[in-house]
Amino acid sequence: MSTFNVDLSRMRAKMRALEHASDYAADKSVEALGGVLVDILDELSPRDTNRYARAWIDAGRKAGVTDRPLPPLRASRNHERYLERLRAQLEYWSGKRAYAVSRMEQYERLDAKAEPRKDGKPRKKRTAQPYYAKMVRMAEHAGKQVERAARELTRAEGSEAFIFFDAESIVQRKQNRSLSTVRHTVYGGEGRIVRHGTTAFVELRNKEPHARIVEQHPHLGHPVATAKQVIRLAGIKPAGRAYRDALAKRAPAAVSRAA
Image 1 (spheres, one colour):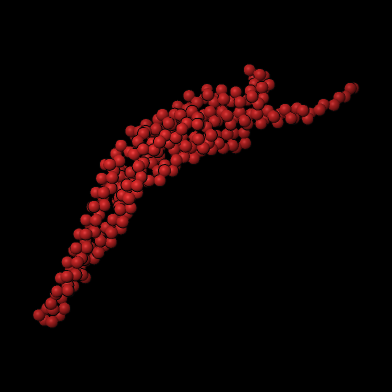
Image 2 (cartoon, helix red, strand yellow):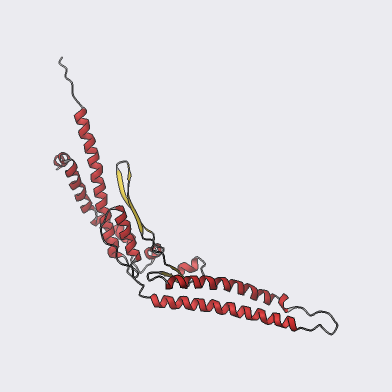
């Protein structure tokens, strides 16, 4: 019986190279899918201040799946109307506070001028009545609202691309918010490619405060849900091509065998 020795070192080296090539190709495939997703989201995103669409592109750029330029920020088409709403809000709460304070002062003046009763007993103070206590509470509450309303107006006046949250909206009412507010800070997006073993996927996050509201709004087309549906069809082919191209560069023999 004849025997022979086989040097497996070269084969193992080739297998390791093929494994790394496959990982690299998988990353390229995921990048291609991520790029398609960003393209679709950019097309589907509603445009006003550009913050929503901009955040998706920002996330894609940070994940390395797109080189699309960030669109410029701009004032909302309702910019002036929102400012008027915020000014009216400040005026309303200032009026409420002024009314409560005036009623309190009226009761205090009456108490100061009050003369003793004919029987010599002191008159019951008006400031001890429930109505006075109610005005005190109103003045305190309205005062806090004035401070908040003034702060929101200042933020809006100092920002061209602020996001307006209407106190009368369903979302605000559900959250029991009595003031219209603004978000002036631009948060953008976050993105990365995550690997778990041999699996890779793109993680994109829109950090803008109105992102969830946009997605849930029935008249805005549900951009994220729609993009996911579209990418299941439109994204498969470019991802497959990217995988094969990347694998061909790293391990051409593997691609030729599979062809």
